[in-house]
Every structure is written in structure tokens, then in C-alpha cells.
Image (cartoon, rainbow, N blue to C red; front, side):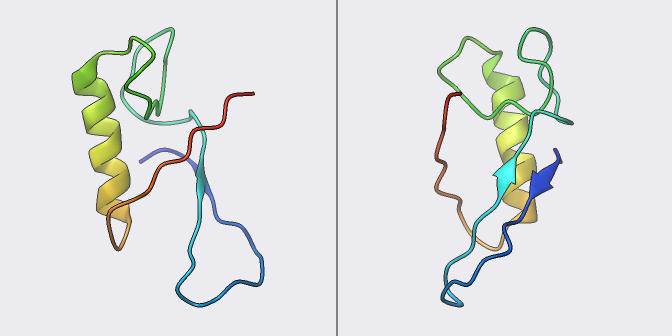
Length: 69
């Protein structure tokens, strides 16, 4: 799986969050790494593999939030 950061904040026990980076994963240039976006032109199979890797590490289905900076 790609690199993730887990925030250290006070939140209800049922609220969990993490942020991924582009490090790791199977996408090739120019999306190289752990691309989870299916709207940017990456190979759909690579995106699916990256998403499956993320899902395998989570206790439930993720709700993805994409922030473009």
C-alpha cells in the first residue's frame, strides 16, 4: 500500500481518517505511485489495484475526498 498519515486529533471513537500520498502504488508516470483518482487519465486497472490495496488496509469501505492543491 502507499504511504499514509493518520491525524492525531480528538474525535469521537467512530470517526477515523487518514491521508494518502502518491508514494507506493502501481500507477506509472505521470501518475506514478499511489493514484486513487479515476478521473485523471490513469490506467483504470492501476487505479483499481491502488484502491483495492487501500481497501484491504481499512476496516470498512472508504469515503474518498480528493483535494487538489
